[in-house]
Length: 117
Image 1 (cartoon, rainbow, N blue to C red):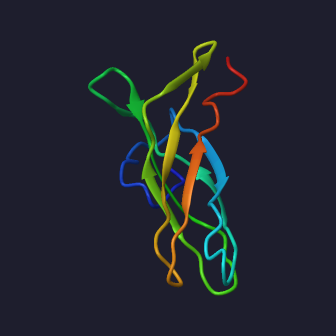
Image 2: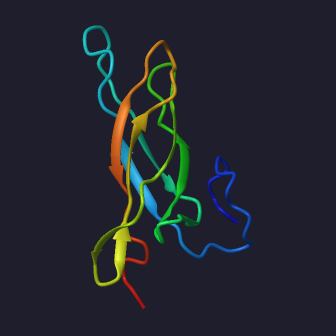
């Protein structure tokens, strides 16, 4: 089962193709309370695209800062080849609004099956 409870695309009894990801949102409230948040997780399994590539859904809460956290929820872009039959995905977006603000972020997933067969 997909370990990411926020993904609605996970329906298989075992994972076959997922990516790890981690990152930090950009600093927000730079004038009065500058801060950012960190996040990490696993994508859901690959979802085919008509062009022959695929994408993944991801969704996690950020870490907690003082009195709030944010939700990171997005679909990745298509696979980006990095050589040797491996690939990553790029993601950018905005966190959910919490405590009167939101953060933007960009990330690249980690390589699927990094040590190979």
